[in-house]
Image (cartoon, rainbow, N blue to C red; front, top):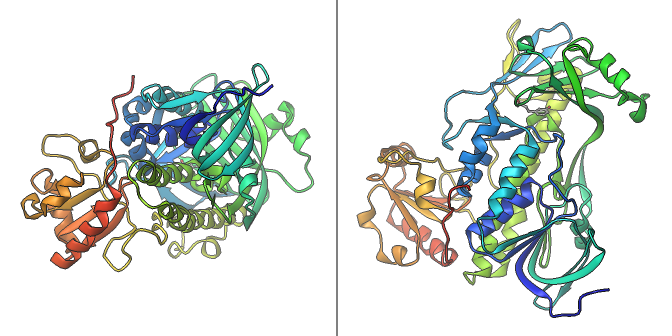
Length: 505
Ligand SMILES: O=C(O)CCc1cccc(O)c1
């Protein structure tokens, strides 16, 4: 029986409480947006899935006030080495162990349930965010001024209905929201079965090393990733004539692992067959319905960027939703979500596919435009972050669509903590700015606040930069007229009441 009382109202309903849904809910909570998260499962899925995230993700976690709570659960990744069948290094993808311009390290390894626990725990800080577990969404009807969301509480079979301004499908590869949007998938061509094996060490095996390894043996390509604590992962290609059920049986799994590890050293936590796909939804939005994370795109894992892409989706979408819901921005602002994010994620997926080609064939030159292989010297791989696609950035101005650096303040703090989840104007001296900027609530970060701001502006030959809440540069100014353009663009997008992120409980 359905409850007939007037439906509860939310600005945003998020379907799915994985890392992407939970990050989006934290960002919306930070904005004070009335948000309901509906999740089918009772608890965090306890087994490992994603194992890697980058500096940009950590910056988003910092924005929602959870970086300090996440840090104890991660280790730094020194990088990944690609070896041929004889152990000779073909490709060296080492990561610097210093902080990047994001203010964090380039590469972190983690255990997904640990991260999810922190992100979900963080939701309790936001009075406007509600989480309902064991709630299975089955219908989404777009009505005149919102979406009618119907779901079943799986704990008691009760059917409920709420009204949402917007619905975001963070509901994974088999997304229900995507079905309601009616989007087909753009197929980028990579679909391979791999056996993913997680083990827990019983004794130290320092010889396995801290680098991730890609064993580029065309007979049976395989990946090794050192996880946190005693966790270690292997991902092993399944050959076309092999049966998915049989290959995941413990005896067969140990047989495949035998060149690296045996049951004397470790216990199996899980062995599961995954088909790694490379697809992008053609349509990320229909009216008030949106996709984020795996519902919108899936990548082979070789760059460790699958979850990162979803966190970027959340960071791009949250402030735009808030600007419309609370700031009166025009709803077509949300069209820039797909136009900005889709080319970005496509570039990462295409690079992951090319890396997959290296792992499968050892053919570095064919797979990558990453430099020339020299006799007896590995190619160095340097992965550059793609630019934001077209949308809100001023593409005729320098640095538009790049990530802005985070600065160390003179008082020792980090600039994102000072400026919060706002638009920020970086300038040499705040005194020269029009007063209407302050009235519009745009944060100013000047050379007096952080020495790095002045140096960075001078290095790029600019006098100002407008940075969005998701830390991407909207545009920069080389002179006063360009600064006027930035100011005019910034003001309408920032008239949003803000709440600050409290530290994690
Ligand atoms: O960069 C790393 O250290 C790991 C990235 C990664 C994670 C999982 C599978 C894979 O092929 C690469």
